[in-house]
Amino acid sequence: MDVRIKFLGAAETVTGSRYLVDAGDFRFLFDCGLFQGLKDYRLRNWDEFPVDPATIQCVVLSHAHIDHIGYLPKLVKEGFSGSIYCTHPTADLAELMLLDSAKLQEEEAQFAEKKGYSKHEHPKPLYTVDDVKAVLPLLKSYGYNERIRIHNTVEIVYHDAGHLLGSAITEVFITGHSQTKKLVFSGDLGRETSAMLHTPTTITQADVLIVESTYGNKDNPYTDPANDFVRIANETFDRGGVLLIPAFAVGRTQGILYYLRQLMKEDKIPDVPVYIDSPMAISATYLFFKHTSFLKEGFDLQEFVKEAETNMLVFVRSNEHSKGLNEISKNAIIISSSGMLTGGRILHHLYHRLPREQDTVLLAGFQAEGTRGRRLLDGEKKIKIFGEEVQVKCALAYISSMSGHADKGELFRWMSHITDKPKLTFVTHGEMPDLEIYAREIRKQFGWNAVVPQYLESFTLFNGV
Image 1 (cartoon, rainbow, N blue to C red):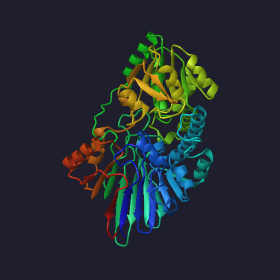
Image 2: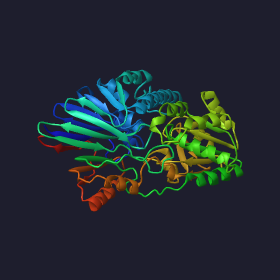
Image 3: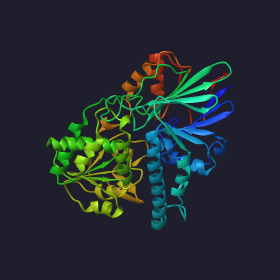
Image 4: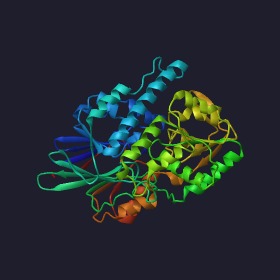
């Protein structure tokens, strides 16, 4: 049989991870993410899916970030009915993430209609909460290092990617008439220095490699973020302001909490209230308690949160409480999602905080092209929120070492363990022109055939397996 791959997303962009694999009579989709960032990319979410979803027999997920799972409800709505394979934490997180995504889309559609800033008279969400509920029974979860048969000719094995709770590097074994070939999907690879998660698992062999490249052409040396938190927090409070931190609800929020609590215990920053204004982040924090075996040994988040809740930590659960935070003028920290400012409660906080010179907005991670976060980093002085241009007068800070993505050095160290030269290496999940430079460096360092696929481009991986 012939084996082919088609890149339906994360090709020449960092979002919308979707790879279609055809192996004889078996077709599966690896990841099923939403496009985010630039409008041209976001509009792809509304396009007809490039293949009939009913012809896809299963979906294999790498992890639960929305650019890897966020299209699932629409795929099911359009006719997909197969199994969705993932790790145990990914299954739990996917329920949270998808329900939150649907609620945000419903609320934004209602708000746009109310305020009249949509070009549609009656704007509709991409999918609803009911659409998400149709996805959940299809999820099948497993642990790391289990051999999972997804077809009579295809098996997968998940390994710890160290990027997010339950994130996975995925080995795909395809057995034909005379031989077995192995595809390796790196998924998103984490850092070697994470306080909570393990270093990404070493892989030593791949016939075909699909590798992420978020920081593929960038060094992002690890420096202890504690010093940055101390400086940024104290400067903000000395000005009589509030520190606003947009953060991904899963992973980033919990890591930031850990650092802030430690610094307060050591009297390096004032013991001020820390408001977690994200229902999903609150729920995700409790899921970290459930899946302790997926965390680095000795990292006891449950004990930490119990202690913090009695001191400085405030979980904001209602919309009314969230809006009430706008009245706080000084000596507080607000953590809210989403991390790239694409939606959620963070928007009304930005609406009120960006014009305040005494406040600080701290970006703590990668900001994709076209997002509000990237525009702030690029120095734009006006940001559109709720259809209005909002002046940026607050202080802006950035901590790159909180990123959950491996940097250039870490990516190349991970690839260096693959001793047998892959037939093909596909460089995905990054932005041009860095992708081309990254691919060129892979060719130079390893002598591999590194390819940057284009959107909707297809390749034959193996003939006559």
